[in-house]
Length: 53
Image (cartoon, rainbow, N blue to C red; front, side):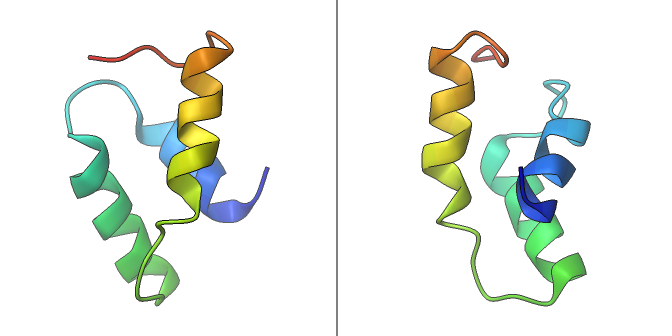
């Protein structure tokens, strides 16, 4: 698990939409986009580690 995905999982409590959380994480990590994390998030949903809110 990379830093961006770990950061997302740590804030994925349903209070923020995924896009908002990823945008904030991208700003903190000083990168333009975290689009590469989206398939990893979908995989965690499929595996039951995250649920859709």
